[in-house]
Image 1 (cartoon, one colour):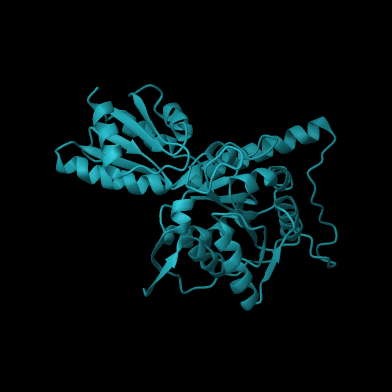
Image 2 (spheres, rainbow, N blue to C red):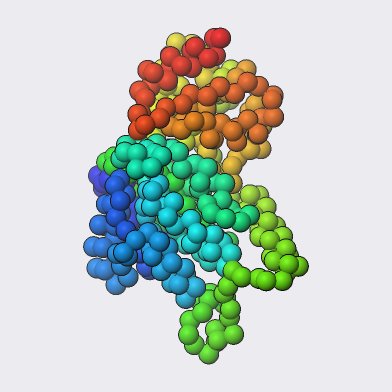
Length: 349
């Protein structure tokens, strides 16, 4: 496969187009703006639809309308913008509409700054708005995965009638790497539930309001049953040198790249450390982590937040081994050497 040296934010646009995206609605925000810039160019040149909305709130409601009409639709933003979309994301879930949202995380809270953080974890993985619903959350760790995850995200969204969030970060989005692109271009199929404005779809109704208590309760039970099927089918992760590990690092996104280097450095010193990297943050690979928790002395979770994923690791291992937390804030990205020192201090303590 021929590879192209390309920025992660640009790669995701190409992956989305190859994956069958038809519409992009968004509003620029650093460090995700290149996605909107790229979509403005490539979507229009490909005969697709690009529209810059007047705000993130408008963009997510445009997504609702286009998704209801059967489009394969996406947007891209960062934490402050995704926060403004939360009501719309809840409405998407309430109407079971498929959409793809790219969140290139920056540091917060508030305006924060434009450097990488992973503090949107809870917002994206624990719902993303009011109501008891879930989003499928994919966590790319490279430009190649930005492409690959965008390529498959629309199929996932359509199959499950859910929002798929590609939870990236400023480092992955801005980093340039060699990326290979799939040769097959996907195309969405006609959706029997969508509203196309023709006779065939005339009787279809898409709404999130169910005033009858019993009816809304039954709808929520149906959603939860669907989420259980998603958990059983699409959970995904990567393991590096876990077979003989005494200790285990858990990380996602850019932090997992740093952790992979730290594992190699620690192994060179004779310390048996492995890496577990969730590719899906929801569904979270709890079952496999529970198995690993029975075979290692300790787990360390490295992330650019206050331990949000570590909470899920704690729940997964259920006290079978200690879980240490290695956290950084403010857009600061640690070196592999810094992580090695934290690991040595924790695992030797």
